Length: 494
Image (cartoon, rainbow, N blue to C red; front, side, top):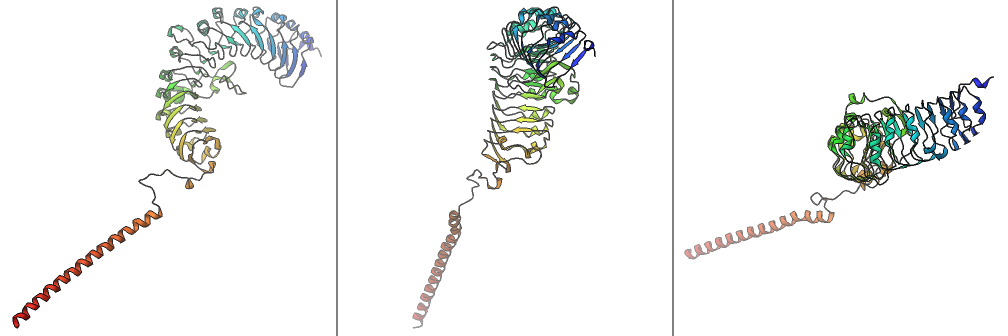
């Protein structure tokens, strides 16, 4: 067999180990080389540039090390370069990518690359997707990135880039951007709050904006109101202060909001209960179904195997946990009929749990733990048949835990820290539960009952004695008077 005629070598996820032989350079007609999700080690072959027809190089999720071979830049027909999750290293700012004029997607994430953002990529005008996340990059995002007018996906999270204001101003010029993931950079800077930072055409196509875990100070910036297509907003794990702005509820396409792990105060804004994409089925049916440039992980400090390649697959969610929010949960929360995850834990919320939560018929996860809720767990919540995770631990709740439906599946940890709760899951029968005593309804002790029971008898006895005495006295007077009358009559007869 003439192996040189092979155009596609597709062997992913086969536990192939060892190194990639330099002989692979003999497959000069190869268009696709897919060896990802194996156990390959060693360096990328130095002669890989001999594959002049190569269009896709997929070597991600292996154990490859070393630097990018300079010959790779001879693969001028390359459209997709994915080397994510390896041990590759080197200063990428000195690598010349400018020959790869047909390059559309490049993923170098989760490696050990250093240097500044590789400026030579700005010459690759066909680029639509760039991921440089989780490396050792430094420096700033320069305005020259505006040359990438086709760029729609950018992820540079988990590096040490600086000057977030400059980055936003520069990226605003990439008019096609729809996914912007900048998390875990710009440490301890201030999140720009100037409304004028976004011009009339800036970020008008942005659907995903992630600025989590940057330790930002400042407040939730009001220029977000200009992002009419924004669907996913992540500002979690920062140092933001102030309130949760009510105007967030006016964003017509927002369905995923994460403001967790900040220092926000004030109430749960009622405007959030009117988010169109969480309340209106008709609006939700119009959700964009296109694929993202690369799969993404949600929540910067919760890296897991859960990744999403379509926005429509993301859970509709509101995360306000770990803040200083207080007050009652608005009754109108029942309008969020399309929400999947609601996390209000570790705040200072009080009052009762609204029974209207039972209207959230698509709810899968509800976390109300670590607050000051009182009263009972609404029995109506057992109608939430999709709820797989539920906790009200560490509150001031009391009364019986609902039974039936999903409530038969939740563990004891869902209710711990509420001494007033009772039910089978806590092995605390409600019939034997000690109840709070009210003096007006307190059951009288047997001793008191005996004394109180004797009082009518004593009163009757005293009354009887007085009545008897008066009767005897009356009769005595009567007979005394009668006897005196007889004596007078006898005297007269004499």
